[in-house]
Length: 68
Image 1 (cartoon, rainbow, N blue to C red):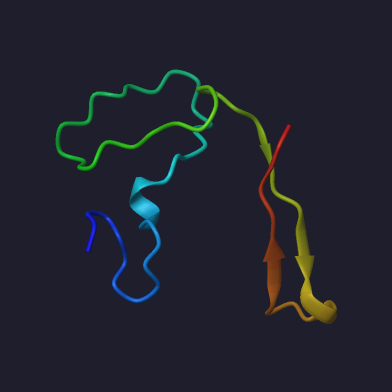
Image 2: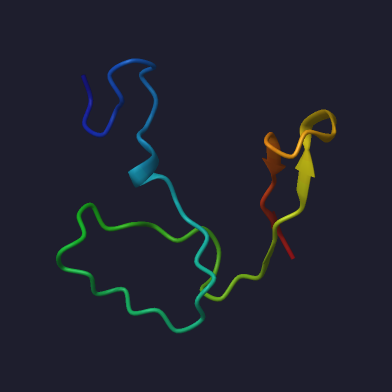
């Protein structure tokens, strides 16, 4: 099995996928956090989080992440 794969579905684990960083001046030197994360896009990306509910049920939220 390759490094950083999940056991059950053989896809890359979530901790190695690129992330959206919303903080504009984040320090990337994090020696205690392994593996070091990749940034998808640029630092300070603005995002929109539209919130909907499945069939109007307040306990079943649908949250989407959209870049602005």
